[in-house]
Every structure is written in structure tokens, then in C-alpha cells.
Image (cartoon, rainbow, N blue to C red; front, side, top):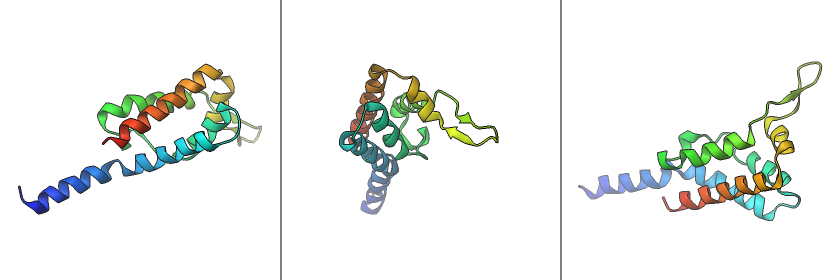
Length: 119
């Protein structure tokens, strides 16, 4: 294997999950430094990765991502009489979650962040 090809492979591996790492780093920072109840901190953490999807993760971490995403977006948005969104999916979902469930989601987010840092 040539040195150029080897460097190309290494750089691709490093860059492949860079976006997910950046977004999860911002989410964890938001949860740790944010002020307020866990629901509020989860809401703002989620706002740091609106375009993040399972495609941004290796196969072995997609279930972790799906758990986080699905558990924060389980409820439908609310609409006013003109069809405008008044409360989003995440807001409606978080209103119904208990503290234990919120801590479980935050824990899974941190675990996903930790696993991703080792790739």
C-alpha cells in the first residue's frame, strides 16, 4: 500500500464522522452548561443537530442515534387554526416525558458522543 493511499484512507476515516462529532459535542456542551430543568436542556441540545441523521453514524451506532431521535420526536407538532405550528415535535414530546426518561435520553446522548470520539 502506498503512503499516499494510506494517508487518503486515514483522512477519510477521520473526516467521515466529523459532522456528527461536532454536533454531538455542541449538544453535550449545551446540556452540561445549560441552565434549567433536564427537559429544557434536552430541548436546546436537540436544537444543535437539526440535520443529523442515522446516515452520519457507523452502523454499530445507528441504534443509539435512533433511540435518541425517536424518543425526542415521538409526538406530533401542534397547530393553530391557520395550520401554523405552535409547538414542535420535540416540545410536545418533552412535555410528556418524566425526569427518569429525560435522564435516560441524556445518558444515551453522552454514551453515543463517547463512542463516536473513539472512531
